[in-house]
Length: 202
Image: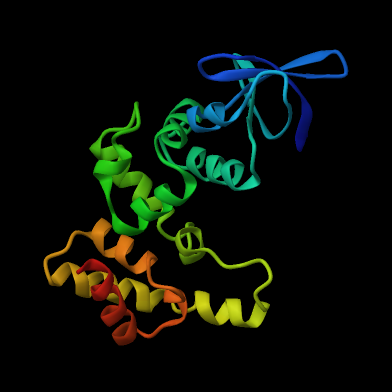
């Protein structure tokens, strides 16, 4: 298994790059967002996934492990292959995808080529328990592990606050966007978070 390839970007095409390492040019498929961040002749590390099927082998890669992990989650969804997964990651960043899944926002996901309303609903259903609160709000690497665990266990407060905001007439996406603007949202109780989020909306 190839964990990553570090080399020089020799070509950037519509859905893949040629990454040269020790005289070998690796064809690495990646997302549109990743392609937009790459430059010709720069040294680049790509974290890779080797996809094997009956009619061939393809190498997929991403500049960050976060993108690679999300790609793996996507292709684990029934009916979602590597090309559709790349389409999703070309349309939504990892954080925006987590946000859409948490909000149940099928419209945001159907903007990706190859995914209809039913596919988006299935993707949300299968990923909602795999994409955690930290995928949207983040936890600092230098945060004490016990404090992190306590913060992340407060995901119910965030969900409760989203429901409360929706009951007030706001969309799921607007609710979560408001919550995201609240510092320390993941560690607040529902009542405190609701008051803070309402201030971000108005």
